[in-house]
Image 1 (cartoon, one colour):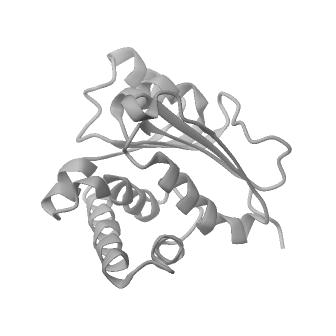
Image 2 (image 1 turned 120 degrees about the horizontal axis):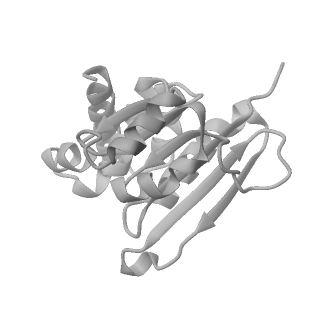
Length: 188
């Protein structure tokens, strides 16, 4: 059986749950990859500064994703999407917490199109807020990524990684947030 090789960059600002997302992805993807390497850069996270996590699944020797090698850039903040676009591989996925791509310059939009990036925009904060869980935007974005085909795991595998071992109320809230993300992906 061949093992999965997959690379991702998760980017946001302090308090958005970047580290939760990278750990959830790690838990979900590891059975298919055999090994996971993660590198986290916290910066000024407590003051709303950048937080970036690199995740490599498979037989890699170092944890940092090189520019042009990420199969997925999952951005919890539009500004961090712009700052980290260079990591995206040709034909890779950009999944971003934004209602549209208006935050990108025309030049950046053209660059995304020129190398075949697949883009999924999701108003995750708005959707999580409507569900009464504003801090759950990261889980909404994960649900959209799974349902949209940006992850190498199924929604069920992702749900298990996020919900197993959680108190019942938290697990149920996360299931609802994942479903909101899946619905958003289906509407794009």
